[in-house]
Image (cartoon, rainbow, N blue to C red; front, side, top):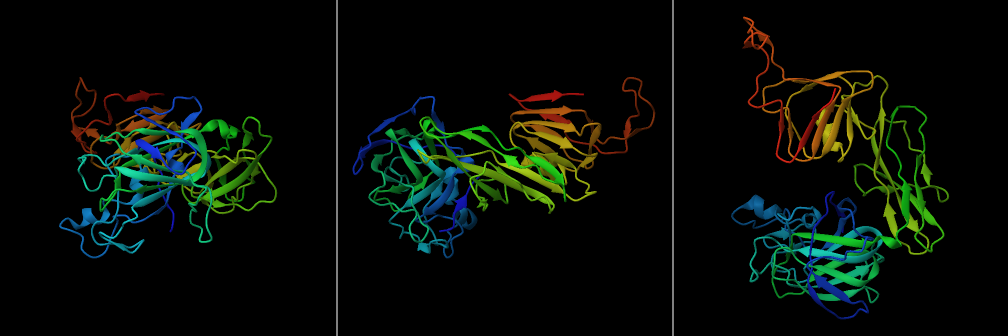
Length: 436
């Protein structure tokens, strides 16, 4: 089955359990393990490797609310970081991916790709919210399988070597942690409902690894910007093996988007550096997988952007090495804590919402203006996180004429743009900083 990747992972599951065919023991509780080396696997690293069915764009009968019914339960909802969405097995129509029709999915499973071989220590499952214990969609009993292998069809192979456990979900909306007494080397995790219910739903899944088995990245590769034909500086990573190991190996990847779904780059030898191609304009994304020689655990570097501009191109902004034609696109492509650099004066035709920690500044040696060019509400709304504007002129677009008002120090007739809200709207528990 074609892999479905979601940039946003997340959340929770679990429960009491009765272990069957495994030598591993489990503990269950409201809180997960507290060891310092137990860390959550980044949601960006997770993807959907397979499922028995999903309620997503089925054909045939779609129910009274067709659009909602058709699209309410894609498998990617289980790792999107939002407990308000959920994966749902097919319950109306037919799943075009598996050709499964409603009422016939008796396997009821979902398979998560953890992104690399890691030592899985615990996980959590959050059930679909707002459902009673008597619901015929909640996963109350389920089995968990792990694997690091693929079969001849390039599908995860869950055989006798897989860890197997039977679990019972608690009757609450938050779920419980399932903690393995010993970490398990895993790449794929299959969760299969064993209830007699005709359907299955899961709101969120979270996975946690024992990082003591991982190599450590001590120097991350860095984003960079170039003009077509420039000589590129090699991307470089530095890493140390896990305690007791002697070496690590490297595999570089190139991705079309800012995600960990890239294509492996063929290189000769085991190299901690890679020279990117800067002969074609565009934004390109790279990262490297670092694997420990003894534990076989794999971790990933940050995703970096290599922006390549045509000579004389008129871009509006740059962030993380990437060039963007407008400010909105640059902000949408930014990560928490990034600096967005404005390259020219910008006409802002619609308001922008900031939901991360972000700095917007003019390019060195310039002072750029962000001007309202249409009539709308707030130019900037800080809904979460923080916004800093530094060395920026912000122009609300008003053009005053008429008799001069002594108090205002300007005319009172606006021949320019007007707005229904302030230039900058700062919501509760957020921060706005006005620099130079």
